[in-house]
Length: 150
Image (cartoon, rainbow, N blue to C red):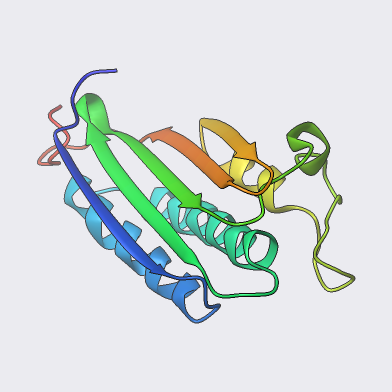
């Protein structure tokens, strides 16, 4: 992939109150592309799901660090990476199945399914005991005056 036109990275504690921060941070950065409200809501939802997974499953018994990176490429391609150094996922294929969860009865098990439905591409890499990286890509509609180089 080519070099991004613009990028940002932020690291924050794995506290549930920071999920909203991550959503707003990603949405604010992507706003330079002049996305539609639907596109912006899709990105925010996907970021929420990825960050919530890192909080609930990556660090179930402690507070750790989560890193959010957002990159913008030519033709309004957005790449979002959410990484943690938590407990990791022993079976990624199983974890990506709808309704599967390790988070207890209050969790729906739909996080990865929701991310997939709102993004064009979803890649999950994980190592037990070392953490998880969720990479999501979405090409936004190119609108006149957008910063994504129409």
